[in-house]
Length: 72
Ligand SMILES: [Zn+2]
Image 1 (cartoon, helix red, strand yellow):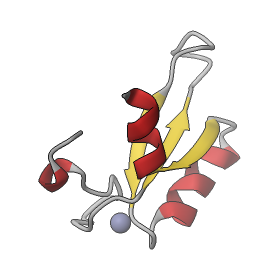
Image 2 (cartoon, helix red, strand yellow; image 1 turned 60 degrees about the vertical axis):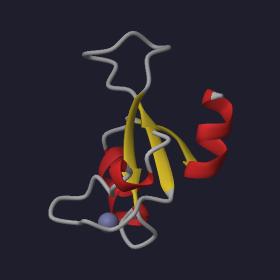
Image 3 (tube, protein in one colour; image 1 turned 45 degrees about the vertical axis):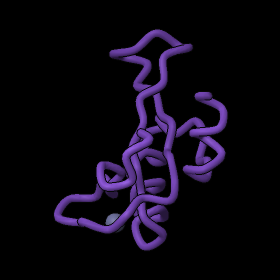
Image 4 (cartoon, rainbow, N blue to C red; image 1 turned 45 degrees about the horizontal axis):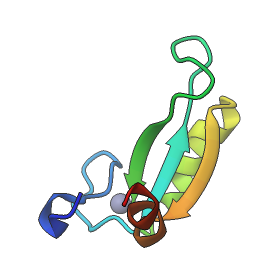
């Protein structure tokens, strides 16, 4: 995650730099404390959040810089 070039938006076909981390969990596949993450640029944050939100998967949306700080 420290390599800026590798931090790209998870939206299909998007090559923009990600600035948001969407933390999510699918209760059918994952234990409750498990967190999957998607990365999003400013443009796709809303779209990806809604995709996860309507399924009840979305747990948290955190600025990338803050997420990386939490990771150490
Ligand atoms: Zn994007």
